[in-house]
Structure formats: C-alpha cells, structure tokens
Length: 389
Image 1 (cartoon, rainbow, N blue to C red):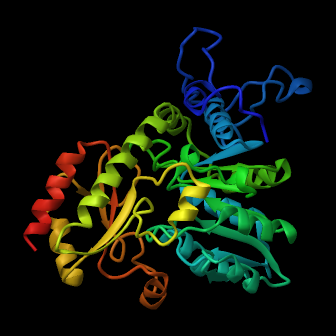
Image 2: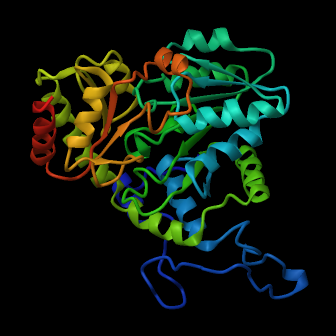
C-alpha cells in the first residue's frame, strides 16, 4: 500500500491523481475523448502508456490514482458501472468449480449476478450471515476461493467485522472483497483493516450528483489488480473518460458532502424514533442499533443511509412514499438530493421473498438516502406524510 500520511484526506481528495495540463496549464484534467493513440514508432510502442481507450485512458487513470490514494491501496481500476466492477472482480477471482461466500444481505444486482449468471458457469455461492465471523468459518469449503462482504449492507445496514473476516480469509489465502459503497473511504477503509479489495459503485457517494454511473475497485495486491484489469479489458467494461471527468469533480467534495449528509441522517433518525406512526428505525448512530460498537470501531462515521418501517405495512409505506415531496422516489443513493426507495419493489425486486425476509428485507422497509437539503425541511416533509397515515 502507498503511504498517504503526508496530507489529510481532504487535501488528497482535491489534489491527488491530478496535475495542471502540461500543454495548456488547465487546472482540470482534460477529457481525453479519443479511441486510439498514435505511437512514435514500432520500437517505441506504448512508450506513453496508452494504445487504445478500452485498455486505458489518461482521464480514467487520473481518477484511478485519486481513488487509490483515498483507499490507501496499491492501485485501482474503474468501470462502466458498479455491477461491472463486481462482475469483473468475481470473474477474475473465480473459476468453474469454485465456491464463494457472500453476505446474506447484498445489493440486489450482486445477488442476481451470483444466482442467475455466474452459477450457470459452475460457480457455487453461499449467502451467509457474515455479521458473525463464526458463520464464515462454518461456511468455508475446500473449494472456497472468495469471500465477498457488503458492510453496511444494502438495505438493512447490517455490519460485518472487516478485520475479523479478513483474518479468516488471510489464514486460508482467500481474497476478501468488501463493498464499501455506503461509507466511502472517508468513513471506512477496508484495506487498512485487512481486506484485499475495496469496491464501489462510484455512481453513489463518490460522484454524488446523479450525473453518471460508474464503479471502481482498489486492491492491496498488484497481481490481483492486474487480473481484474485483464477481465475488464476482455469484457470492455471500462469507464468512459467523460464519466471519469465528472467523478473527478465529485471526489473533491466527498468528505464535505458525506459529513453533512450524515449529520442530516442522524437528526432524521432521531425524529423518526419519536413519531407514533413509525414501527421501527434503523441507523448505526442510534443507541438502539444492535451493532453500534462495531460501527464506531471500524468506521469514523455512521453514514447517511437509514431505514424505517411504518405501522400499517406495505400499503401505509406506499402511501407515505407517494405523499413525500422533497424526498424523490428513485433508485439510487448517496446523491446530494434526498431519495426514498421501497427495496422490495425496486432494488431487491428479483430476490425471492423467503430469502428477503430471512435477510431482514421486510415488505414495509422504507430506505432513505439523506441529501444536503435542510434537515428541518426534510423532517417537515416526513412529518406531513407520516401525519396523514
């Protein structure tokens, strides 16, 4: 891993990976919108590092270097989407006959990829409650080749002890991949806790403005990184230079945004616990959160995601979401706009009901992604909707 102790996170998110354009002095990294790169001669092929933009692009490289600095890894690879990052990582690290352990609560797309796509090619998967490391040990097989955890998990916010699971994985020389989308490297750095790969949907907090879709992985091992880049090149699932440009700008305000969003989320969680129409509230910053000690120990913040259930079940939840005005009913999270999502009908619609319920994704679960609007306005909007139930 690189040593990024010289500058603070806030300084690195602005400056690392980028430099004034050597030709014009432009302060922003140019959008290198090009297919190919002219070589000086046959004998000097790739002297400047690029041959074809599916394999590498200077704008994308700048973003990869910035994310590497923020995650404190040896290198990163950026992708067209978060699911492209997940797909390439699994395809690089798993072969026919291999077994993978996943958290029992993961993003719906990760569940679909595992059960409906990769399983067709002879890879087996076990969805395990990784909040207890003993369950991971019990699920290990001789053919286990990957442990993939998501913490906090989408949408239940269940946590996995990254250091404990990484220790189990390292003892067996099995890679441990952590989906770090919900907390970002500002609040949580899995590689520093022993994980091998930290994965993001950069669509979410990293870019943060609902402008683009993208993904990234950061590795602590050069060989593993190159294997994933090889698969990315084969699949053609690389990030475009325009998306990299947008994401570079979003990175500059990451810490400021997620800190403010998290403060809003804490205030909203406190409010929801007081409303008579609310059955249950889940937020890692609440004393009622069952894993608050772990949340405090492995991360420096609680994030801006929370969920709650209203009394009256699904119909009450639908009425609430249809009545909200400031909270947009939309399938994303981490943006400056506050979003509300019904996981059962949106992000996890393809997950079998029995599996959903077992994982704690109940029919009435309402997920909130808190944005940068005034906390008072967001609470007022929630109150008017809840008061009508």
